[in-house]
Amino acid sequence: MSGIPTPNVEVQWASDAPDAPDEADLRAWAVKAVAVAGGVVGDITLRVVDDAEIQTLNREYRGKDKPTNVLSFPFEMPEGLPEDAFAPLLGDIVISAPVVRREAAEQHKPLDAHWAHMVTHGVLHLLGFDHIDDDDADVMEALEIRALAEQGYPDPYTVSHSSKELHL
Image (cartoon, rainbow, N blue to C red):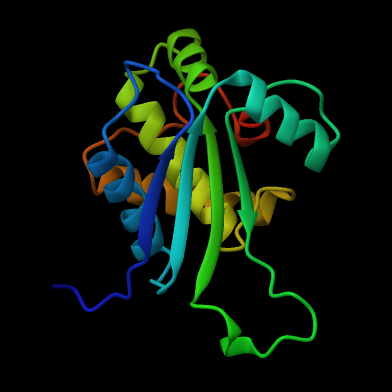
């Protein structure tokens, strides 16, 4: 045991994607992303969806009326409640199985490697990391590369895309 605080990861299925990874892999990728970010205790819900659901969420929360690969929704404590009113909730990650499948094919990546990247990317967003400016992108990408490498996956940024292309 490493002593690094780890989250509880619940997986929800709203897609019957036959080529989606199993729950054990999804959880392992999420836990590894948290570990490379320094560790944290709390609950993460990871929801695997189809295009329609993620498009609705993308439109409502980001103003972009199209499917995207991954969305993260950090938990925000309702105003006026004490900090200990809820168990430690980290938030929700929503991943579109069809988008991940299409991107992996377009980018000539193994499907499991792209899934691992999208889970890692979503978790880091949940923990407050971002790629809006170059310095933040460098930090986030370094954590992604490390988390993936520690699990035997290649650097996702050496192929044909940049962080700006991650969110369709």
